[in-house]
Amino acid sequence: MVGSSSSWSAALVHISPYTFAAIGIAISIGVSVLGAAWGIYITGSSLIGAAVKAPRITSKNLISVIFCEAVAIYGVIVAIILQTKLESVPSSKIYDPESLRAGYAIFASGIIVGFANLVCGLCVGIIGSSCALSDAQNSSLFVKILVIEIFGSALGLFGVIVGIIMSAQATWPSKG
Image (cartoon, rainbow, N blue to C red; front, side, top):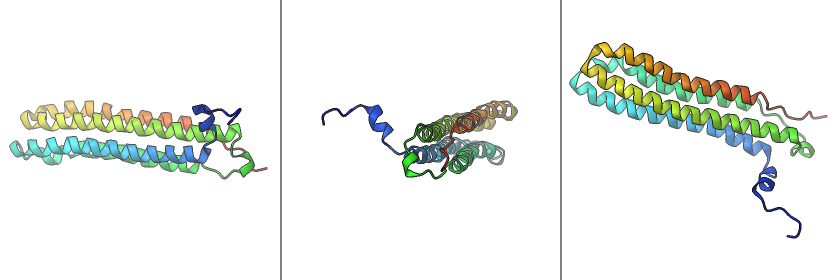
């Protein structure tokens, strides 16, 4: 093709902003759930293993599993928020700069929330695992490690806040 651009930027501009928005929403919920599942796997396996030595820790250390599950809930909440940002646009305005910016903003917001929650789920899972193993050895360490786990859980909230701030840039062109 003579005169046509074959660069990635030219290709990305011709993908519908709705496609980018949908992928961002899917990444937000999918990767957040992956982070929660991974954290639950790490915490749960250590919790069950440590409970063999000290059965008293099972109910107390379930808080670590709940913190991991909260990571998935963060992703669901942001996916709902991002879904409400979608608006119909006339086909003549679908590739306007405002439409592209809205699609990219939702996409970026979904990526940030998804991967922040993935890392948060891993962090909470590893700390929860350490909490279960430490609690089995010395029960006075539970509250101390739980405080660290709360700080690790805050990472997911930071991702949610940044994602919500970025999604505020998602304004679609008016229909008129």
